Image (cartoon, rainbow, N blue to C red; front, side, top):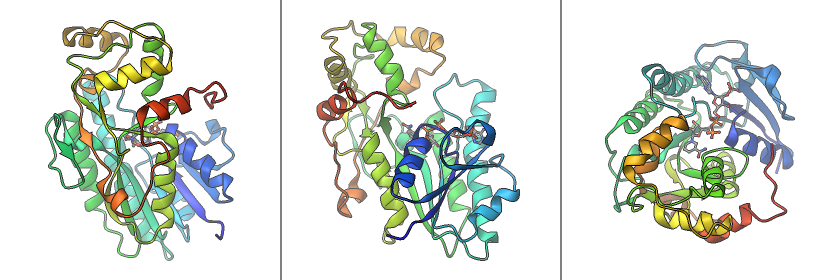
Length: 311
Ligand SMILES: NC(=O)c1ccc[n+]([C@@H]2O[C@H](COP(=O)([O-])OP(=O)(O)OC[C@H]3O[C@@H](n4cnc5c(N)ncnc54)[C@H](OP(=O)(O)O)[C@@H]3O)[C@@H](O)[C@H]2O)c1
């Protein structure tokens, strides 16, 4: 395949770094749009943007093969009014400005791949959520609805469009697994609350393969659940994580204790106490196969002794 030129907006984070490496490994040219180009230590070329206004960065999109937008303030924080404002604005504004930039190109990118979240389905109990499932309720849902609306309001007539509703990505170099790993190593990896809330998850390698497929496959368009085929309950997830980390037992964390723990970890109880059982209906219907579909294998692959976390 001819090398491509791919623009990664917000490509300095957990998923951006994984994707940048995979693209560079196959010979593509990667340009990262970041608010701090001087701090980007990756091999990619880093270009300044502020995530909300036009600037010289727009020229990078001209003739690019793809733009992938991964920008957004991390949601693992306390939902103060200021944090909530930034969580929403960083997502909505970056979508709007990328749409504007694409429409200004004489030779627009072939595809716009946009990250979203499965949180749009809300606290869905044990109901199976494919891409047709209704949106739920609550602050994370409102954020996702505004994020997806911004994309709908930013048409790009020539550029193919893919929206990935991403689940909990399992990797050791970033994301929420690091937090759960730390707790579990300290014998605090018991089930949370009733333990019946579902966790939809995807191994980082499969997540990267889904991104690459979205970039490369001209048939992919619209909304996809980017999650593995086998969601599990919180109780099952924590049991398998304890097993992978050789911690056979930990006391359960009662629901009333979660707000206290989250306060000290500077995060929100809703992230631990709610869940959804999502499936990758469209990816599978279109022939995508998962290298790590089962949780015990996925975790043991991540924690095998030779698999040191990348920085
Ligand atoms: N990781 C997961 O499990 C997961 C699950 C569901 C959805 N997602 C979504 O996938 C995307 C990428 O996830 P990630 O885990 O790679 O996130 P991440 O590590 O938090 O990185 C996100 C990037 O967004 C940029 N950013 C942060 N605040 C910003 C702001 N106010 N304005 C503009 N840019 C800002 C940062 O780049 P600079 O500081 O360099 O500008 C940062 O590197 C996010 O939109 C996230 O919500 C991730």
